[in-house]
Length: 482
Image (tube, rainbow, N blue to C red):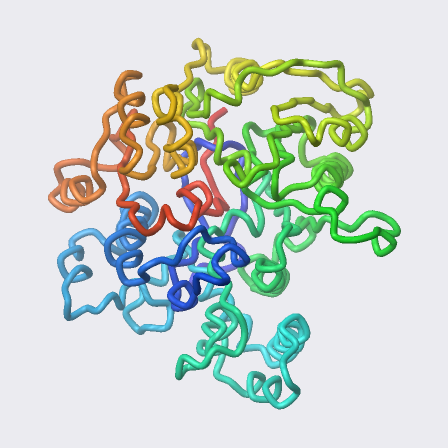
């Protein structure tokens, strides 16, 4: 990282402002070591072909991000980057030809940076070895490992000779889940699954120790456990304090949505809301409880924002039975945890009685028209064009999990045909990323000139991991939309 800490900013006030900086993690060798017997424990639906995922899919994501966020790194160099002789060196953090962008920031690079400090390296090695039950001799070996190589080991779980010493953390590609920027604060997660413990530990060390974030350390929020949590019987998910970034959306400068889902508990949502109010980060928090099913996982698998007045969503979860909520979010939602439907309650700082929304559409319309002052009627684009079975099939492959590079320009998987048709019916253009990159390189089109476009990304292997590009991004800086 070349940008000084004084130049670096964290500031995210919406889901759709022009994206200026984000954290990502490109697929690493650990993804190629997921075995069928452990795939679901490691939160994957299937094993993936790593080289296809990299070359034919994720690399296009990185190239696209570069053209939008850091064009000087890629403009005029596309043929060289794509050449066989280059052997993907542009995408490899441990290679001399790595892009090293300070706008499209690679998590592995930040980890390698902090491991250069002896004290941090020793502490982090000890912490990882404690989590993974390593031997003392292995701990000493890791302490004496070169930082760039040690960063790879922590992420892939393997020594340089491919000897696996602990499990990989393949979910690190879903960088949004380890933390989310809310205005100029960072809210770090508490994962629901043991498979994500190590990546959460690495994220904490990065945010608290990397010089890039030195000016923001007082603005890092960590969700505490509830009092006497160690007395809870068993491992009941609903009683644990968990929160993942896919369940947190910064929809306007004073408004955050938090989902209660398979991965984020009522307690986690409540603790996050208290933190945000206590630190005066936002004035309004909406809690959206969705069915606790693997089908949905996080709220960003059932809706994301496209424009101020346009959202994409799963229509089958829109019809609700509104009830008057209790003032206590945990009590009210806990009573409904077994119900296979969606519930919405909005809490404002300083007010004792929350507001209920009867449909997702009514909540999202309120955000568009009142919080974001769109001045237009809110529109909805439905997964699978809102027709069974395509709505459910395409939601499963992340038709609703889209990342906005700027207002109206979003990227999603090319396999969701009916959803693409629904975008076209709403006046959007759909273009394959391969064609778009060639237009950028030839000077036929500039990212700043694009409007109302769905960029279609190849997805045969990435979709097996059950996450879209909203999941594969941690925005740190967006332009304001108000």
